[in-house]
Length: 203
Image (cartoon, rainbow, N blue to C red; front, side):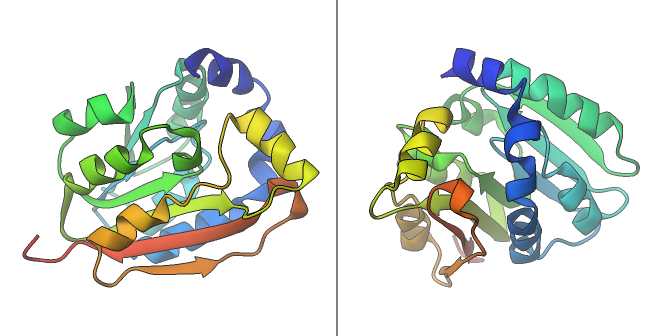
């Protein structure tokens, strides 16, 4: 998987970046960010969400980006260096392995990642443990009950399973869980959605 995404990073921005801008904005709105907070963006890919997150965090905010692919992170670093005010720290590795060593954060975004992870349920639970009480957890991904030809192509390219329902783990954790459909191009291979929830104060 890592080797494939290292290679995919060479064309990722040019091929898919324009398809998800509205969804990235929706994710930021769902996180309800405040200036100075810390956000975990995992997997952060090439850093396409960084400008959206930075706008929500304002000056003195902190983005913690994590990804398995060194190729993706190389391009994410270039985007991070172009931001002003917000601090960006990048980590390389498997999210399940990284989770125990992560600091507590105010919000977590998993954008187009869980459908490509075999251990997606464990990842959601492990990252939930790193979320501060009152913090927001947001998942944006694509789901398809039945796969179209485009859906099969997306699955192959992303090494993903679009039939997966990773939001159910978050639903079991967050009492105020919600999931809404987002505007979706046929090119994404299914229905984009944004799932979100708040970690209870007594969790």
